[in-house]
Image (cartoon, rainbow, N blue to C red; front, side):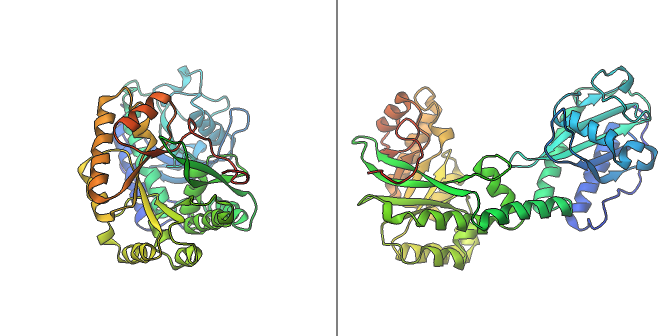
Length: 405
């Protein structure tokens, strides 16, 4: 590798400060020094295609950035980030002059580079983390890409934890979520939860669907809302929309809604579910938290129990932490996650895990629901290990509640 320049102070964008910014700066220093390159950088960009590179902006640098015109921004940076995000160029390029995938019209001062995408937990592309050298570096190896990818994941976590997106990007995300909250683009579908023997419908799980742009899965909408501190607002909007269908429930059926523990612990949630008849509502917690560490959540769950609301949680393994969580929570319903159900008919490990959870549920007085059942063989195995109810496309896909019965 080429000799690295002496360390220089990392440069964050204007307004970026605090623990998160300092941690990103340290990560860039690690990237630059470990790769032996002159400059490391973090660029932010939006979704991009090979034909329409999104504008990119430099968020952080470490090293003498001014010596690379590329890092001043503009078409050359846009094109390089687009190539990296679309995998049109290798993550490690020891000699830019010999790399056919390097974008035309790029910065001639770049002799070698390493760059990988930065992707947030919901799958949204944030941008690119990379490092540059003026001279080709024959010592760069494909294995170096692994180290950069590890740093990329660390940066993504910091971005989400500390809100390190550009102000314009954050405001755009807030505007998208607020449009949903104002009543545009949110709808609900309902998936039956059935008795596996009789196929009688026991209840329905309410699932959010979003008709707004950009087109993406519901979990990505909720993740974006959480990043801009509107997660609870969006969850509550979905819950209220689901509860508005209560009158359409068949006699004896329950409605199941999803909520994170911070939302469940909020006064707004308790107000939203107040008045629902006892035994008609199930709240499935979408995250795992130790009840003893959250007094507000403990009080909220106690109040829900007194009101006849059942609590559900999903599990994908039968490890000590999972069983400890179940013991603290003592849920009314334990749902076997689709990751555990998938292939349970052919995988003895999954089968044993399922049997363990079913036995544990019996000890704490909980019922078990199998999720995402896709095949007759999975259904037969779930019944064989003692699971009595389930849901999945094999049984019934999500759909409108009107006309079900």
